Length: 388
Image (cartoon, rainbow, N blue to C red; front, side, top):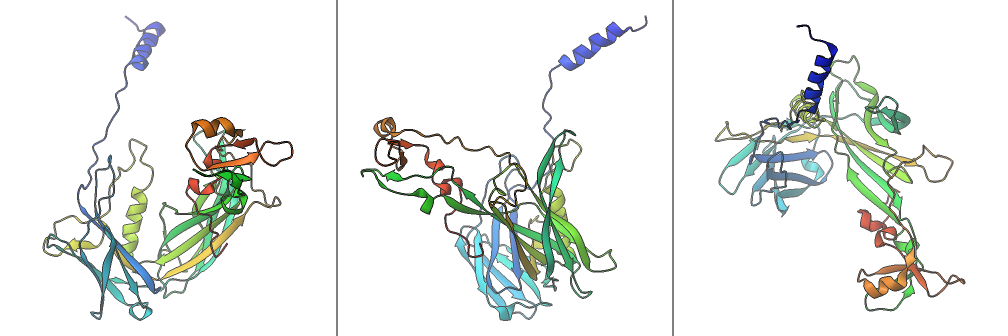
């Protein structure tokens, strides 16, 4: 009997009405494996090595490994010990005489269980300076072709000599200024009377600094010249308050050996989105460190040496003549309310207040949530950076 359109419709309804069971892909991952990450640059000062153990992909947490002996040795046998400053984090103040372009360095780690781990030697290669950092206002596409996300895209230009490294990774650090929603005239602390306090003077402006977690790599090996133009870095959208007042981006350009570059390329690929069914599954990259007595033991992380060049750019947007675009920020709900009832029922001191009297001074008072007055509650500090 021929299948008519009603049979087809019935089958489609059965298909789309069926229960959908979630698919949990089996992810091959390293659990409870030693993870060692360290780097030295040509800049004298504090250098770090971090040692931990990997945790399950679905239940990540930091599992430091303390009590290790950590040494960095150059090609001449000179040795620098690293001391444990906090669990799993080791540091050393290295002088400029130990650090030089062209020298090779390796890391040694002795764990409390008697195992010894050692990296390959990594050569500190010359890194060309950054020519310029700049940005352009752009609209980023979304899954909806009718909707775009405005923001600014940062770019970098770099020109190097033939003798410089041709492999690069960029580490980014962003700092932005933000303001509290309200400012007060008075304050009431626990066990005290109402006193004058102008939050605008101390708590209204804050600055927050965070590393940009994305990984940016590039090589010029296949180019006729050791140069990059309009190399893309991070994109900052109008969906946060980062660009609302003033934004600063610090770019750290690092020169890499071929093996270190391959490692960061793997990390870049693995840090991408994994939402698609057929995309690469998340995992951790094996670097240049091994157990010298058990080469088959899996060890994650890397130790590498690099010359580092830095440059900073500031984006100012608060004066009015440089408005970038309209912001779509989920603002805090900051509304004034009568403080009398709050004083009687609450214990959330201190209370920031303003006068509701017709003269603008004295009681009765209005108040709001602390986060509306104290910008530090949102994670920043109220101390302006030196470079601001």
